[in-house]
Length: 293
Length: 231
Image (cartoon, rainbow over all chains, first blue to last red; front, side, top):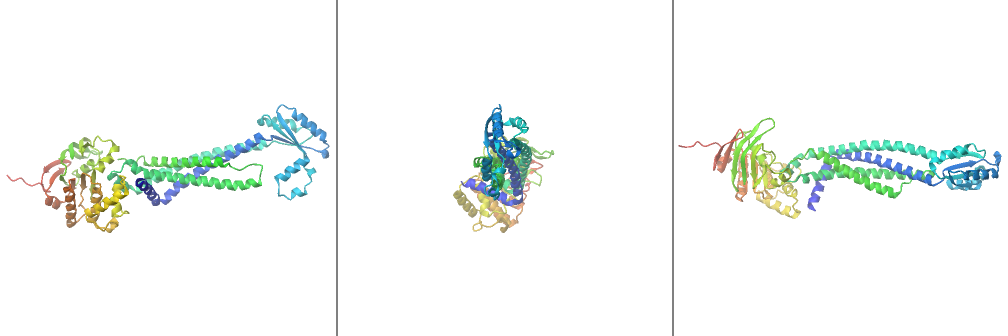
């Protein structure tokens, strides 16, 4: 026990001597892992949201009404026609009253809901497809139908979001990779400086017969602490960001910004472990040329 | 205890530091290595610690061939050999007790054992009551005593001293030599490189003279300068 305590104390002494360099290494790990964790979280959000889309309504057809000369019968006829298409799995008809109820659900505290006339809102047909990726074909068939006011396919915007998130992900991962390498190099540099600052002690340790590992371990612990501190900050940063975005979520319920706690905990542990490994790796790199017997 | 067989050390630039040195040091012996600067005394000490590797030849320390020793075993060699240097090599931010304890901490000794052994050795080297002082609060002689205490606290069978009195005045040097003599009388083999004529002449122990890396004389109860033989 006293040996472990001694080694830990030696690492802390190292860190106290170079607070600025240590902070630099911690921040480099933080930036790198924050970017990586952030990119991963965005990917997860896009995945869960597109999943919801895939499981839900794929195309919404808003219908014209009596004011446009479209009768209820025409609407019913259109629905029957749609039901007959190969790509369509099922349809649901939402009338004006249903649309009003939905409006009230979407904007529960809005005073507009009390003043709005349900007749203003269009009735719609909600379509579920057998293959959600082929929504364009259905939209194409619907556009020219006389009873159709507007066709909305959430898939289109989701595809755009997914495309954007893919670009952001690559960018994020690219930056994270560069920052990650920088972090490892910086940790390795920090350790070299720590060895330099303690060269006298190291030479005395060697003189009195300390084993190579005994000399190296405090520096490896130092790297590990720096890596884990950076990773801890990154996890904290992502948690804060997810809380902030979560508040936005309450206002815009079309896109779900909530990261599941399972995902967060699992990846937090992995990122902390990665920080520790990167720290130890950086130290080992720094120690490689030094401390030969 | 120490045996050198045809040891030669040539540095990268081609400088010959030791040339065909053969030497036997018995257990409990006190040996002075004398010679001018650059004669190879310090290189010899460094080779005995495996801080330098021999170019050719063999060195045995405490029964082990250290020239064939794998590097990972070198720390174990150094635990059997205490070292004392001219510049003391003390850690300035650690107290006397902490400096001495450092040698035992790196060996992983339990705290209670460290405490007991450190107290004992502080008394032995005559620094009772000064265990909490920092090196800068001590005189040169006292700092060298701390260095000797650190080298001896582990009770090594061999003590290597490289100019231990080099920075000290004659009176203080005598005190240090008395201490080393006491340690030698406990059975510890001591090899000491020195320039100090007075000490070598006063102690009258075995003297090995080096010149340009070669042993030029080996005398029991010798003096610093070679005595003219009387026909």
